[in-house]
Image 1 (cartoon, rainbow, N blue to C red):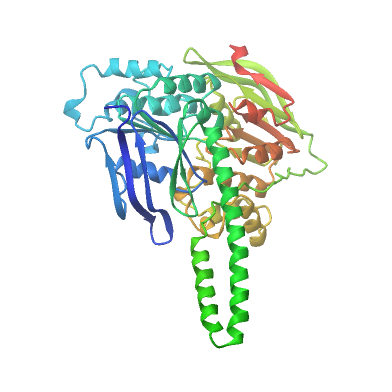
Image 2 (tube, one colour; image 1 turned 90 degrees about the vertical axis):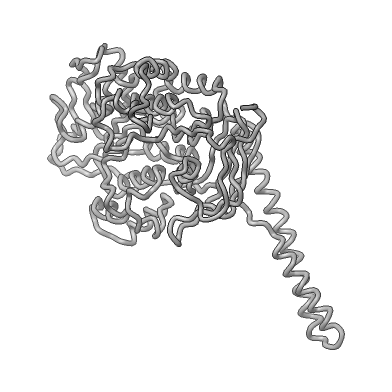
Length: 492
């Protein structure tokens, strides 16, 4: 396929979720073969929905979606492995990428090995998907898409759960990738490293604009365009007011001046119609505080005692002494490569199942899990917040939710229907209303718009309870006071 040919084209595509949630309104754009495109848009704008339209999993209400050639293939690395697939073996999962069981290639294991090399990963093919860490699953998801050798590769938050080495390897791979890539990510540095264009999905106008250039340049271009549109609109509004005021004066004078007044009103209406819908930039969440649990006089000050940890070495668990003790206003960071057992350790602590760990009496644990499995997807967002509140107060719940961009419509929505970014913001709103004594955070930047991250970092920096965190984003961690860093790799 020639590198200057159009491989994907949307023509006047309209799509709604039901009658109340428009996603696209006569949107048109095209993508050339070999492009590396970032798909931008506010949380909940419909970026993942756009991917489903490209894949053919959803059909537009009107307009057309065209691939060139018509049999061009599309592969996707999704954000998470579906729960109903987690007990499949790695080999069986990769075999499922081939729709016809009789056409599974005889050299499947070699093909798996080849894509594993591309994503810098290795594992036992007989292991289940569930037996892999979040970072390992991220690599599996990318390899799953690559084994299909698609003409268009869709990546949905591919850096989530990857350690720094994994992100660097993925970036280098994509820079050399010869086919078309469209990626959703909130990791600005990752996007800027390899993209050459941006598709911007506006949540308010339901239009898509295409910009050429690297990520940071495009962000600046969008901001400059917004300012130009606002300035032009301000001038137009002043001219409209002037024409209407003059029209009122002439209309009251009667006679032939009434016709002049009519023409001036018509000119004002034409000027009003010519005003552009100014893009409203991605909103950021409000500054917030996570109140720490208050304890009575009998509390001994020890929120968590963790004398030893279980980590993974050469595929086998080993126990190491660490002597971790968490008290009020004590922040601890756990470091280590993907697969060493960080997420498993945090989960066991949160569930009270970590070997030798002691949680202080009556300590409330606020647990942010990287895959949001601590949320009940069958609940509405409102019910999820209501159940966690220490003192039930509808007004406080709605005010707190609004600060995280969760309006009444979102609160009435079942969690399973929210975007991943909205689930992340809901999880932080829960922490605010819970007033925990111990925060356990497993990759709290996953799926979160990068504009929100400084505000979240500030809230965590000021948190007065005990904090135990895993994060692979150095810039985010640098904004949070860390009292102790435990590098699990050094324990091996």
